Image 1 (tube, rainbow, N blue to C red):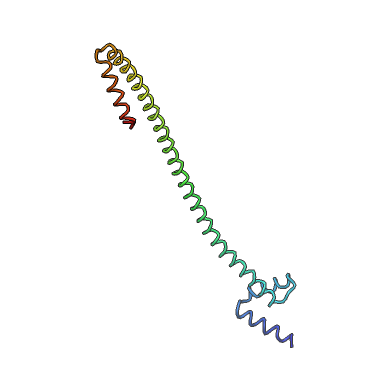
Image 2: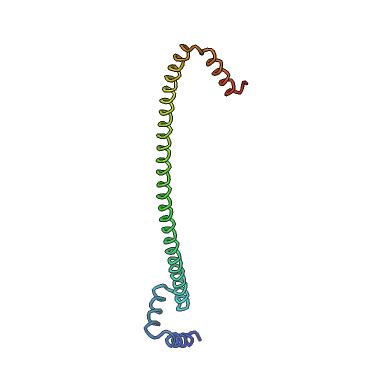
Length: 148
């Protein structure tokens, strides 16, 4: 009975895939040492695996492109952050220079004020109204301090 089934199987497979494909399948099954059915199952399993790999490869390529895009965006952001840091450092340096200039100007004004004060004190001490001027200055200083 098995002998009869084989020719019928051959004719069905011949009709479905053609003589050349059948011959290739039979040759491959012989090299693998398995039946035609097992050879077909193995080929179909390999085909599914290849399709899965192709699909996975496409997905991996898409993920890789997405990752590259994210890295490029991060690089652009890093460049912007570096530019902002440089601007902030420049502003800090400018602020420090302005503060130094202000302190220098204050020191100059203080020195000038001390010279004027010394000059005025010399004039007041030689004035006949020296005691009135001193009392008025003392009262104004107390008022400024909140001691009035």
